[in-house]
Length: 103
Image (tube, rainbow, N blue to C red; front, side, top):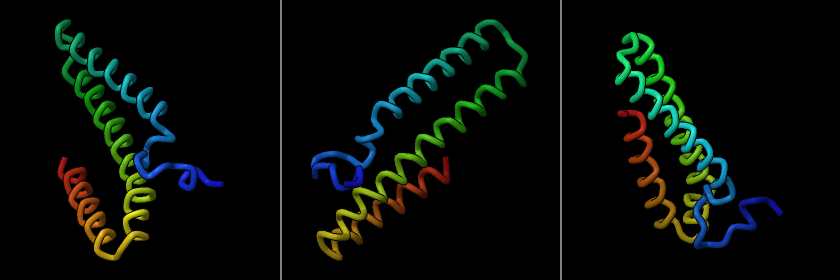
């Protein structure tokens, strides 16, 4: 049985990977605190910008992972339920993709 098949309807697509996502978010939180310290300590601008780029890339990776989980679980489940429900989830996912691309 695949991970998708073991999920209950109330769970989200990312639920099986929740611990990994939380670990990544704590790491990102630590990076952001590090950037705050760098600014407080007047660290060279380029070094601060380099760390900001790293945090941005890490957040984008989390966002893409969540999007993939959403498509593989929520959108697929909705499409199996009905054509209309599937279309609604696709529109929702498209809007989320647009927000990620603009950020």
